[in-house]
Amino acid sequence: NVIIVHCFLVDFLCPFLQLGKSVVARKPLQKGEILTLDMLTVKVAEPHGVRPENIFKLVGKKITEDLEEDATITDAMIKG
Image 1 (cartoon, one colour):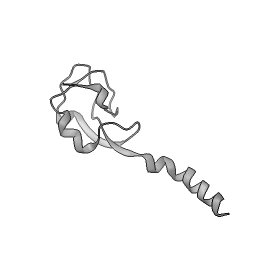
Image 2: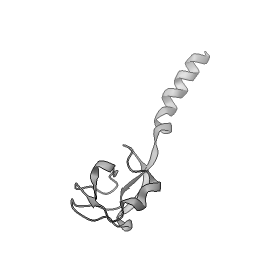
Image 3: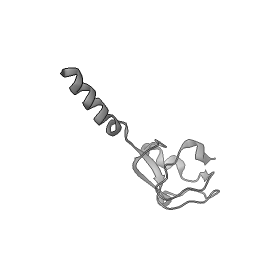
Image 4: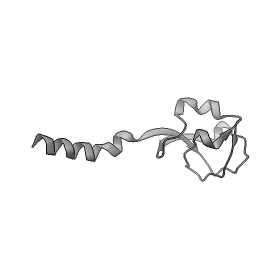
């Protein structure tokens, strides 16, 4: 019985435990735009991207692809 309860809890809670906050696009962004702080926000996002504590490191960098609003920003999308 303990094993069954444990398996149920792990299966049920795993998706929630894996969620983390990432930097996302506050609005649609076009390839080549230079990022400013007002273009970025932090949300619970999947897939994981740039960590919230690194948001200021993105300012002044160029985005390498078009992004929709709320799209997770990853290191691979940043140049400069």
